[in-house]
Length: 207
Image 1 (cartoon, rainbow, N blue to C red):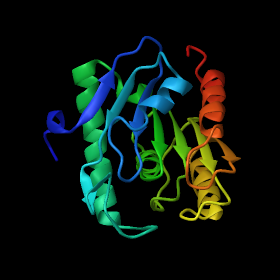
Image 2: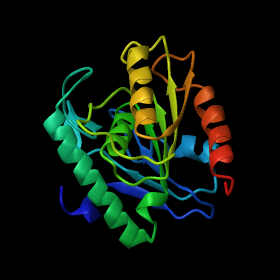
Image 3: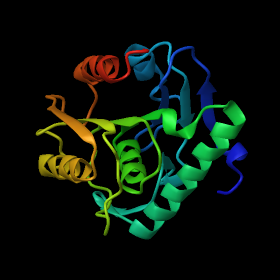
Image 4: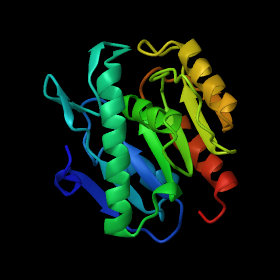
């Protein structure tokens, strides 16, 4: 997709930075994470683009060959496409791309991690049930970017060691990573509101 204006998305200006970039899980829409964002940072601006890839009719951000096996060529192409969408949104909504904190769940968390590992400017990221999207030949310089990872040792889709590997990659790239294990498996629970809310208040006091 090159006409970013045609991409289904939701934007709300809010009144307090940082802005939240909402990236839903497989089968979601641009409205799925709005309630979670409202609980975490009710006054923050939000931008929520829908995934443009369909898998058996379910929206995703990039193709995969099987569960946990990503189409890396498509991942890189869709990551570049998402970066272009953020640049378009910056001009359209006067929201600087490097002020977004990505809030991604599952497939959306993997897209957010791909943005980070590709060196796309963001202010930070909250990654719910992520795995390693790809292993870069050269790590980006994340320069102290705060990143929060919430994973689960009971997750049937994402082995816990993959979240640990992602945390290690991001730390080697210079990010300040905090990782929490939650008891809810792959689904979302109360910790996915409370921990990110406290984390945002510590790293972004304007909220």
